Length: 131
Ligand code: CMP
Image (cartoon, rainbow, N blue to C red):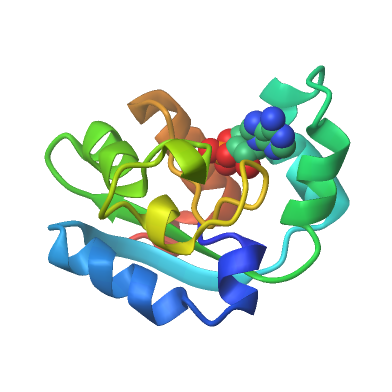
């Protein structure tokens, strides 16, 4: 997902361009907005964390771009491309280094496993929207 902070700042095109030139194939994509309930469900794994309320408010405050990406070793390679959760720790050349402002408002989300990628893809897209 391209998160609300990056959409608000007009970074959709730059982020998609970097994703494409890094060898990912976009097989599904849409601009959408998560309700509070959607964000609570999407991030249910974090519901006991102190930042959960902040995370849900942030992720539902404006539109996002959701996408499913394909590539050999996609999960690890995408996590390398986006960089550390905290942009202060993100490596030079990563999306979070370039576009994120804080650990909460960190521009991009990437799935942490193939299993979660399948669940998160199904959260946003129906079978007819996956190419
Ligand atoms: P993401 O990769 O989408 O997965 C969980 C999100 O929780 C993470 O990116 C951050 O946006 C958010 N998050 C993680 N740690 C913190 C924190 N300490 N304070 C606020 N938000 C956080």
